[in-house]
Length: 233
Image (cartoon, rainbow, N blue to C red):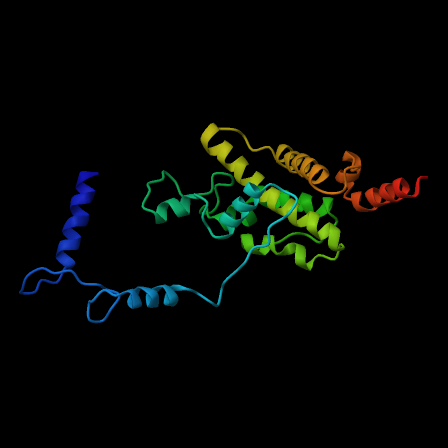
């Protein structure tokens, strides 16, 4: 470790340009090297990328902390092995711990890994939508907009996507840090169970039953129950 630090210091010294004169502080945000509030403001404005200001839609019926997890995933803020390497944190191996085939990035874990691919395949059959394919977390988060399943079901489908993203990451962490084997049936079952409880008690569909949830036909069934209750039949 000390040798590495010495080599880095030696490299920095060799690349430095030495000039005559006394040392002085220089502000790199201004051509003349003078610090000013105006130059700081200019740097902040220039740093903003107005061409790619993605705003993620949060799901209203799931806990906020799960929305935050998906939001962090979309911004590549989860500590994958590739991210840790970029932060100069030593990792024993950069390959995905779930499939051992590609470098572990957040997009690979959530869309390209064999585990996540099978999770999305099951969800597409469960929610009766076309096969789910994506190259990034953003692609997955935007899927609900292009599905032709009705406004109410789109809202539910969007929440299920966010839940699945976190459950995949949770399974990854348990495998890496606890040595737990990956169990697809457990991951999918956990997604369904969590979604059922949150939607049942966070929405107006309190009459939702497990069998309808598993068949993704709860909207019709719950509306029918509400109509019967309102009509007094």
